[in-house]
Length: 276
Image (cartoon, rainbow, N blue to C red; front, side):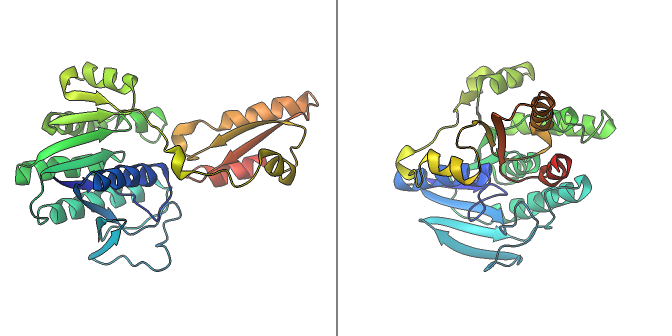
């Protein structure tokens, strides 16, 4: 089977989406399937194209047996709402155009977020008639309203209409948890068309390089309780609560607990300034 995957992030980017989609593709290839990925030039999260790459109209490379087509997109940092939306739309248009010319495809898979990647899958479905599997990792546009990036408006209503059309266009939908499945059912998506595939990790691909005692000593936490957050530091993650908890402990003259935040994203610089 030839699987065409539409995803805006892919290695050498190392965010959650890129890593997850790479693992999917790697396993599909090992199962004997042909895999083509349409993505952009690696630039997350700083909005700067990685060394050794450009942002041409189209380029092609092979990664672990995966055919990777990189298409031109508007590059912008992972902050600033308008520029990010324009970047998403540019990916949607270029991915759709490129997908229509990839030959002998059996199924199109698109992952959302971001939302416009899912729309690229929907447009490809309508233009080519290919079977379409939609992966939902976030309920959009509800999530951008929830984090305060947009308020309820006519634009949100238009996006919600597109959201319903996207769900209707998919032959099958995959979600990461039962809560997402329930939300889709509430949006009139048949439960029979939804599968739940939770996140996981391949422990054979990960090795412990240093003992936790060594890491604790390096960062001054040898005899302290460590509360760690590891992942994207974005608008949706509510990490101000970590700073608030640390401030409360400091006001109580507690020094037996230390908070570590490991990752990058749109809110990292703001949180660093607030902590300082």
